[in-house]
Image (cartoon, rainbow, N blue to C red; front, side, top):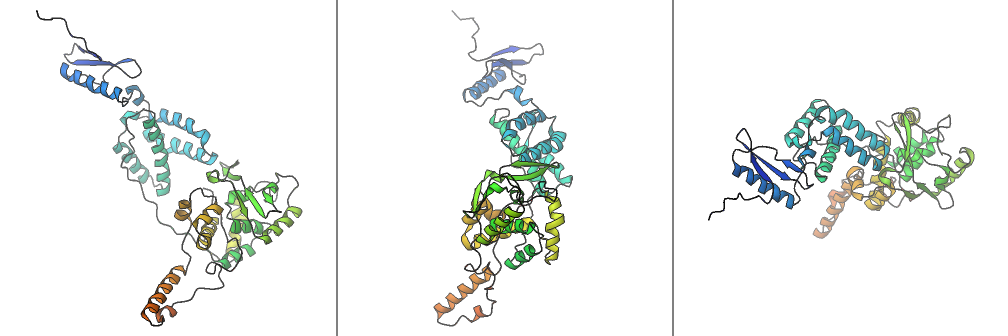
Length: 407
């Protein structure tokens, strides 16, 4: 006898609507019963959809459809609140401004699930048309990409829409690598005691914010070292104190003559107390970068007969000199980089004449192997033996250094 009882589905259910279409309902991974996002023309279509939905749940690939309805603005706030405690103050301000000014106005009202790569590509095109620099666009896109990756990681969306997006390439810029004589001329035109500050920037590799933050307790005269464990920068007109960039505290050995100059400076110009700043404004307050550039550094650059020299150029010069004499790892350590590749990519540059030295050496070796004098090599200019950048055995143990411009 035939069994007329209707078989019951093991997962989900299907029902016919008054419109004649079929609706599938299923229990999500959270146990809540919910309808499929669409209706189906036939019962078979609805059942096949349930099979696929069950497979996704079993494989851990199921995404709550309600999560995808969360807007970009809502998710951006939740994401920013979760990461902001781990960010440095300057980065926190940067991210907040990017979200408020460039992400929310164009994408904030869209649901996360509605975003596609073409949506992001169109947004990047809008940023280009707005006249933003390549660096700025890359920064904005990086913040948005981090937001979307977090949405993907938290099962808000099945996959990030930041895929295959073409963003502007950064133009190749070469910093101004100064010679030893140029650095000496610059220092000679700095007003006291700011000449000592520039010496510390030049011969210890400090960032400008690290130099402004030096305190009496950071100078260990008996050991000939300074401790870099703090940095100060301006955000919206206010000084913000924090760890050095990349949280890289370090202790640096400085030349003996700088130790003696620091000893005199501490005795004559610095207030008593371990927290007293080594360098301050005339009013005794923390130095401000723009004012310091205007009243001291830029004037000394002009008086020294130099052009377009910035503290950033000094840092690049320092990295190049140290890498050339002692290797990239030594340069990275003095600069406070956690990864030597950062030093190579952003700062270390070939010293003038080094390339010619290599060519001359190869020419001489080839001529020697052929049994003839290296005539061509003698036609090229010889390295300047008075320039410590070209003579690693001359000059102080610690090479000139530089500083990093606050953004």
